[in-house]
Image 1 (cartoon, rainbow, N blue to C red):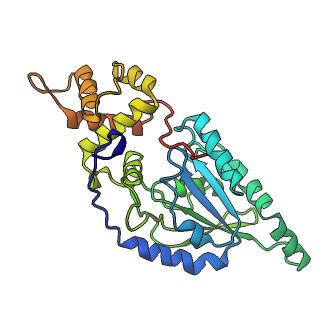
Image 2 (tube, one colour):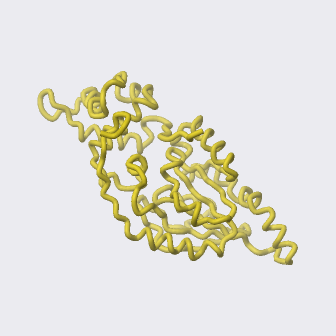
Image 3 (spheres, rainbow, N blue to C red):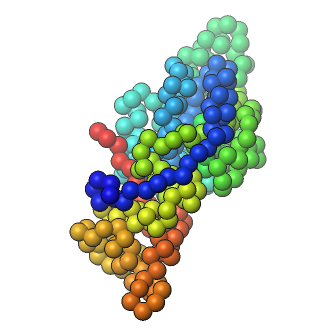
Length: 291
């Protein structure tokens, strides 16, 4: 057992191609003026590659909290303040609908106002600003770039690693974007990070045991958003129960029977994860900033 009632899990995760992606970023960082990092607004901590601070060096940084339409607005506001307090410029977007994306170019110009003055002083007023776009797989990076560019400039896909190599994209407003492969880390520093990435589809959930993932997620939902669980699954969460028992209660309400008196926990785990992914549980954030 993990602490706090969560079940321990074995994560089967060996992404060899991530080292190559990291090397490509290290080689190209000197060519850009700033780094723009896309995070999933529901899990800003877990969707942030811990190597990015080191890889970015002293380049100016813009953090984009994407998928805000799926996240709890009050929690997103706290994350925005949290990152701003660390000196980052922060934007909120929903790349899928394009919400907030129009603020990107003005934000970059503000971030790099000193660099623009420097270009002007050197007689290079027309020189484009170059921005590296970083983010973990499936965080909406390609969709964001396409919305900013106003055309299909980057290949989007619902599976990790679709962006194979680097790609320069001229977005026609004095900005050039360097799209990069989504990078995760060779091993997760904690089980919780792996779980968060699986719950939000950044990694395939089949690298984890689906039932245990579902049980831990149900326990987390019952603690953080009991009213959402009650509204969707028609039972009042009893926090003295473990995650499997809570899943069983939901399975009972849904009528997911395997045999008389035995409920289908696996089906319920899949249903819970699927309904969260489809936004049917409401606007749910799974991490809050440590402040």
